[in-house]
Each structure stands twice: as C-alpha cells, then as structure tokens.
Length: 274
Image (cartoon, rainbow, N blue to C red; front, side):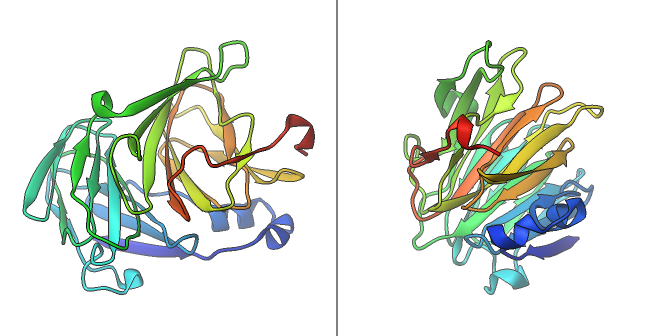
C-alpha cells in the first residue's frame, strides 16, 4: 500500500505564531514505518521526499507517485535508501542489492521502479536530479568519517558520510548518519544555518521510553519538537537544526538544494541563540 502526504513550505514569520500542534503538523513526520506499506512525505522544501518502507516479508514496489508528476518516481529523481532493519533486498534498474543494517543504497535518475523485499526497515530520501548517475551500495566501512565534539561537552560523535562528494557523485542529494560515543547526546551543537539547502533528520536507535528534543527556528526565535524513535523532522533552510536526547540514539541526515558542500554552513554563536 502506498500512502503520500504533502508538507508545504512555510517561512520564519509564519512559524513564530505556531503552537505545538501546528509546529508538528508542518515539520514533524511520524508513522513512517508501517508493516506492508510505503509511506511517503512530499515536502515543498527543495522538493525532497522522505519515506519509510516495511515489506514485512513480501515484495513492495515503488513506481508511480502522483506528486512527483512522472510515470515512475525516479524518472527525474535520485534516491538514497538506508536500511535500519534486518538484511534485505532492494532491486531497481535490473540490479539487486542486499542491504545490511546501516547500509545506504544510491539509486540514480532513471533507475525505474524499486522493489523492496525481506524484513528490512527502509528509510528513503529522494530529490530532483538533472542527469543519470550510476547506482551504488555503500556500507559503513566504505563511508567517509568525521570525528567531532568531546565527552566534556556531551557531543562526542562520528559523522559517517555515504552519499557525499568524498565517497561518490550525486546530483544534489547528500546523505549519511551520525553515531554518538558513550554518554554524549547533543547533535549539531554549536548550531549553524545553511540557507542554500534544506535538511531532514530521522532519529532512530532510540529506546521506547526516551525522547530527542529537536531544536529549530531562527537563532533569535528557537522552537523545539519532541521526537520519538523512528520519527523524522524537516528543517527549512532558514532554521537551525540540533537536538539533545534523554538517552543514546543515531540520526540520519539528508540534504538537498543548491550545492553538495557539507561544510558550507553559517555558524551560529552561542550568545546569539534565544
């Protein structure tokens, strides 16, 4: 079963007036992972699509998505697929790929319908593309890594880059995930902005009784959204995006927009946060 909803772009002025429910309606994505379903959210931020696929032992085929405006979803798009479940199979473009837990598969424009099988839990991100590039499966050992933070500031973490210029070529999609070292819970702090591209986060590996407080908004007008395990949040280009958990977790980040330079950010000083 295919389910699609849309999130329309809103600016900082409108966001200032939103209450908790309105913030969640406009930026929070829940219910991604449902057995036997493909659940997609089409965002109007750089036309990014985020979604969850749970084959539950049967094949699920993702092909036409009306919101994408093409006969098949990848006719004018590229896609990254992260498996956070058991090893499972994804097939597209006449090729089959076995994704272990933590692997990310890149599918290029024109790869055709996508078949998800087995007992995987697949998180997908898709952005518009301007040319066809080879599909590629990237495992954790093949990813580029960046160590940041410290135990003293509770943000000691390693960033793993999969769909990234240091690893492979894409049109505009950049995707990877961040894993924390023991006792660290803060992500992306100090905060920053990148007006040239938007970002989406998926929080996972979070125990049922823990939460992540995701911070967003302009630096002088911050807001927060409380996140459960396997929930996503959309971050507009004008917004900061950082968070702190009540326990350990991992988060997948994905970006689309004007460039693929991961370090193209505008830092926000602590004294400027309100």
